[in-house]
Image (tube, rainbow over all chains, first blue to last red):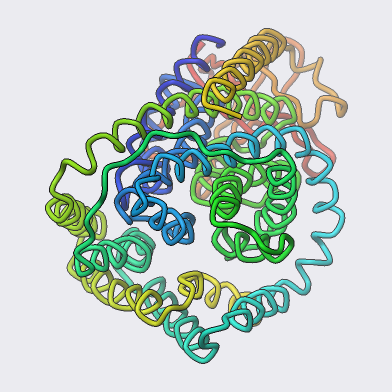
Length: 401
Length: 116
């Protein structure tokens, strides 16, 4: 069994490279494919090994996905907020530094969250029954807080939240549309940013390979903020790392660009690790990968959970090495490639994938509409996180009605 | 902190993780149990039993087996999937699953089932 676990970890890391680096390809997609193949896979291996594979892939993905976010301006929902400070650093020739900051956040968040998983989980388990009764009000409050916090234009923030919410409701209720989240989220957070990068005619300067300097005091404060915000958002449906980043930055005033990147990196990983605790303690699945695990492993025992944590540690450590190496490669070649052609290729790839995964043209329509909507925050100068209304509003209405 | 420090930390934690996995996999290999060994204290534990299928019940999404070995019988719940192994009465099978309790009776929720 030990050898099987190690093979699963390495395969998971390999797939994590693929999902992490290619914009628009999310671990949820691969997890869905694994679920559909589970009947065949369970004839050759056990549910726990499949779960270890998915977890390793998710952890590696959470480390690597800021690379396309920062270097290509092609984030997912979870890394959308990293684009602005990360892209600024990229245009200063400090793209490598930006990714290393998110890496530091991811790695230390992984260790801290594993150590503190049970105390955090027990606290959440204690308050969750109460939280569940007022879930819709918490989500309404969180959404309102995020909109109110928007200094530039609260009206536009509310408008975008509602528009994306209506789009989300419409998309999720469309019959005969497979994988509705893929065109929706790819358009809102992926292709929209790519289109903006194209229209801005961005020219990437030569990148320096320098490791960022960060004080232990700042790192400790940021890790504390990310643990608090990440813990809350890991258990609340509809609130992901993007919203947690905004909430987390409220706990730490005067957060620098560099600090914000560490926060974003940490939150993605915290979300994944605490989702495992949520599955164990509350039998709740908070993301696609965990949903797949919950369907394959009927009951997660304490021993299974400890194994998942150990596998996360190994996968995270491998991902540190991979991230450093891959980021250096990206830094060296990015200023040499034709950026416009690269962006166009990625957009084309996403279109092809939407068409095949959705199995009809409605998926492409959703991609176009969500891309158009996704462009608005950048052009209006407001936060992209309001587009998470596409998931928040359906969840709020689910709890209310 | 610099790049080498980060790499050394990750190497250290990967070794710790691998040791933890080794320990868990060594202590969690599931021994073969007899049905009479299973008690309410075994609830939520993973078990492995071998027995003969006495009855097969079919319901939406679920196959319910009555498994018998030389010490007793137990109900096994098997969730249907698209490619399932063909099951027949009096077939000898190995089941790996988790013990649960339903209406004061012990049952096994099967993770794996194969011909013994």
